[in-house]
Image 1 (cartoon, rainbow, N blue to C red):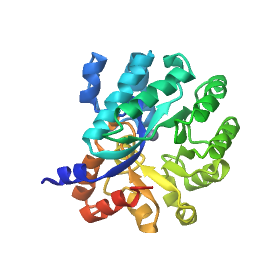
Image 2: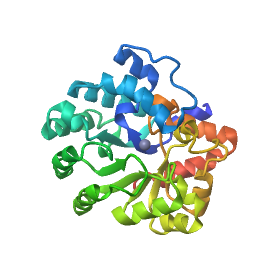
Image 3: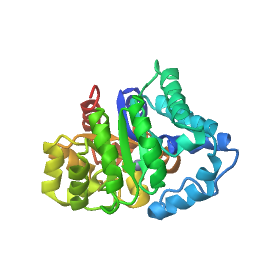
Image 4: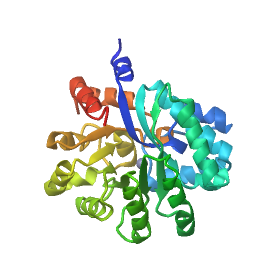
Length: 302
Ligand SMILES: [Zn+2]
């Protein structure tokens, strides 16, 4: 059995996967009906470079509820092929609009969860962009959370402390409903920003969290609070958040006792499944095969 096959066969939790961009390009292009020139790239010009592709190609291609359903389906099927057993897949709030309402959105996502229930434990996550119009966030997010479908929520966008008040009541509501609270932080931002977000929103998990490595006190806070970081190594290298895979801060996080999962972020852009990234990390010497199995095993059944 090849090393890749061993990792594919191993049970894995993926907890950082944006389902509208979570499939391989080879799965996306036949559905989209077009090719994207020189894509996927090995390196993007940071998040702005990535957003140029989103603005020009992927966002205009997704306009209906059926489009959202098709994209989520492609991502779930690629996760199944990679042997992901638990998928905390992020369903962006914008698709409430595409689907024609909260009920239709919830029904679509629940349908996919049920359709693939014998192949993967898909736990829908509500994803909210910080720059999404505030009136729509207020109108849609509470109803989505109250539906009972979503097991976690995640906030993403510019990693700055300004403008977070809008989202505080939504996080508080999620906490009351027993929904896990996550936010994207510490991808490009520093340890202090990680600390502020964790404390302000009382986060259960952090998407990225690399910035915590700049300050041992903040890293220790994550360890002490048992806050899991859902790390995306290929994405980090591709966007320049980590210098190289060999120098990825995941090594420091794991050695410090931080809870970790290895995730794809946006497979369409970064082109490496969880299993492929595990092989890459063995190849570059960041972790041994046994350490990676230990990392994968550490979050199963949690
Ligand atoms: Zn992400």
